[in-house]
Image (cartoon, rainbow, N blue to C red; front, side, top):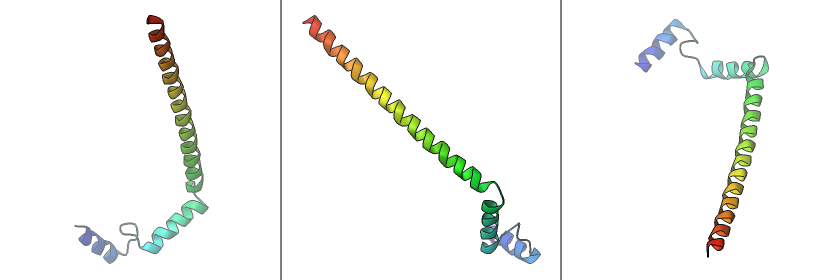
Length: 81
């Protein structure tokens, strides 16, 4: 089916149905130079960096809480004896 679609697109000479490699590269270049693609890529990278920092801080708080609860548990056990 894909081969038939590609042949039909070539017969129609319609790059929208089956774009050539050059057309794909040109569209990507245009998206970076004149379109919003670069800004969205940078915004996505920034958001990813912030998510990683937040996750790291959350893990640190979780470890600290576990540490404190272990200390309290040990103190309670020592008081019972």
